[in-house]
Image (cartoon, rainbow, N blue to C red; front, side, top):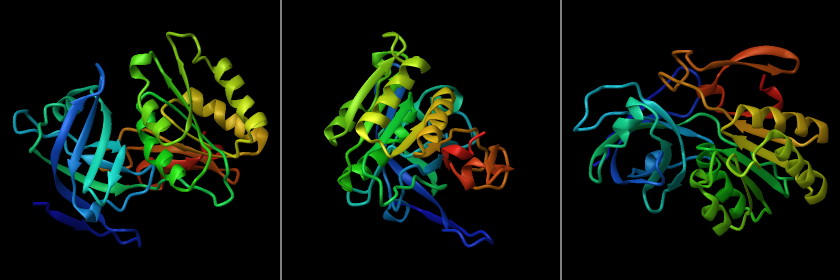
Length: 276
């Protein structure tokens, strides 16, 4: 049974919901990443690609409590009643998540934040992600397929072992280009050549990215040069996830004015040209 707690703020924003979900599976993808699938109530499955949930890192067999961890949505299916995340086991909190077994309860808050924009005029979007950023772009890739758009994905990782979502993207009809450190193909110089080739040759008219600051800097410059729309989903440490604690504030530039914005509430998706 799922428990829904609604938290209303003074500003006219959608209600923030906490739900007690049930773990369906929590399985390894490779030596560092795991795939967590939850049975979730319909009330929290009205999601947008690029949004995230705040997961309570607590297990019946582990100490705690820990701060919640922000996790970008890897998949959601209102019809099946499922919500999924692809996460890296990097510390104590995610280590506790990794101990969850089928049938265990898990508290999640969300969906939170502002998701990706898909302009009506877009015809050929490009997705570029590295590491766990590939999880963030998965719901977007599905949304692009459902709109019948031709899309290309560049997937980057340290090695072939960590190139996740490649088969998933291909099953959705995306053209996938893989680059990795161990093959020597993931350098900024090589990526610039690949991206510019797509922009000038394939007619790419939109760019989405997540997971790497150096890739973000490169794509910001290329989108500005070619006058192409671009968005980035940023990753940042958070405490509350709802805009109260100010722990995730970063500088941005909008209309020539420097602003400090909250990644959790004003993002996590931002226009590429606003990122400082």
